[in-house]
Length: 158
Image (tube, rainbow, N blue to C red; front, side):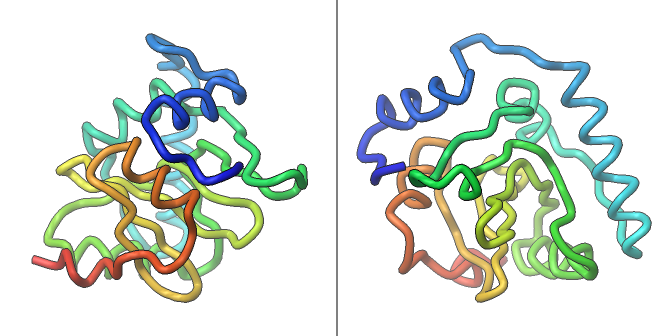
């Protein structure tokens, strides 16, 4: 993925992965959400699905979008627990924001997790910290594609 500089570029990037306006995968989204919630319970946490994340996943779940030329470096649009102990980190982000969050995607290179909050904002949980990506999918993926530095999530804490 080169740097995405416009909503049209984000749509084109997603379209290469199989997305199109009006795409709906309700059954797959429900299954993946249920699996994610079970994984969080096994990791000692609990996770409630929130409407913005549900809406996003119904439209984007199952997509695999390349980040660079390497097939090992992708964004997978699946809610997932990327490492043991992530439930605690996700809860810390939610507590700081004062809003529930839910994972909607992750990258395969760094194992970072993209989450949405109840306001529909996007955040990135990475081994180096918690980051704000944007207020909507377009600003989020434009910022994500540009890379670091990203805004720290704690600037958005309640």
